[in-house]
Amino acid sequence: MSTHPASLPAPAALDDSAGRKTGYQALALLAFAHFFIDLYSSGLSAFQPALVAKFGLSLSQAGLLAGTLIFSSSLLQPVYGILSDKTGSRLFTVLAPAMAGIFISCLGVAPGFPWLLAAVLLGGAGIASFHPQASANAVARIPENKSRWMAVFISSGTFGLAFGPAFYTWLTERYGMEMSWAGAIPGVLVTLFLLARFELAPQTRETSNRFDIAELRAKWRPLALLFSLVYIRSVVQLVFTQFIPLYLFRERGFSIREAALGLTLYLAFGGLGGFVGGNLADRFGGKRVIRISMLGCLPFLALFFVSSGWVALAALALAGLLLLFTIPVNVVMGQRLAPTQAGTVSSLMMGFAWGSAGLLFIPVVGWFADRVGLGTAMAAVSAFPLLGFFLALRIDEDA
Image (tube, rainbow, N blue to C red; front, side, top):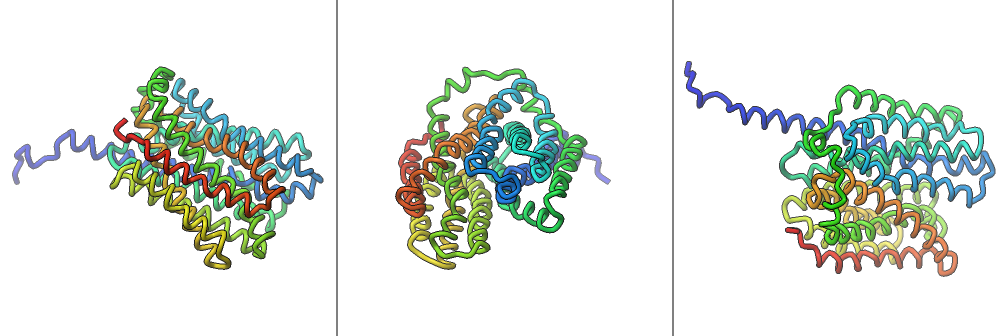
């Protein structure tokens, strides 16, 4: 038997292979957790009809609950991104699923409106703390095709977002509102699993205690351009998510079940779109994928408004798929621009853009719809990606 050194694996090759395996394991773990985090983030929409009936909430109070969730789960993400970059503690990720699950699931047993506000605020804090650090660590150990693997992480959250309302609707219809707390069980189990298995990637540990505004300031132009593109996409995504069921039911003659199917298709195909877009970005470049997304979704958005029945639903699904091509692409491009501030950049490209777009445009579109009709208001918003396409022409990927 030969014992020539060339026949043995090189130590560096073994280390590289072990590192890749660890990287894929970390990605799978964080993607699994992301599914449940975003499932909880969409739970409030399932609870709202029952909460309005139970407590006699006004529409203003219902809107305040939704606004509080957007504020605590999205707008505060940069704060958690800065803190996670600065402290390097893994607890921002580990404790998040339990915290989100417990407080969101307890909405069904809250004794009054102040308790509802507190539960939404604290549940949203769990959601916000997870995203910056988890997105910075999801692909940190994977050396190549980062857009593809970031797409796996982000798409898992989008599928969770789509499944959340169905999960809580099933739970409360089968067991009653008094058993809504049981929805927290998956989140607690995920936290225990993270506690046992999740460790920060070496790259993120090495850059802890090094939040550096100078690096962000040095790249502010390309970061601002990427943020603008994320913001435009978020406006369309959130307005459609909020108003699709109401629009299909009130103005298009769909049943409640069919209208809910329309939203599920839109979100589910959006999750698939993020995965496809991440794979395409690794092959053709991020800037091409962003341009294809912004221009390609326009004809399907238009077809949705001028068609009916299954054709309209198919157009809506394909519009969601193309629109959400860019979610992982923007995050990875932002992290490459400021690699030592990955948590902060991720929070800006995900939570802050999402939250600020929702807080501003959902009320504005609602106000506009009261005057011109919901279909007209949504059709006006669907033209936003055209502006995104022209902005995307200015992307310099090498920067």
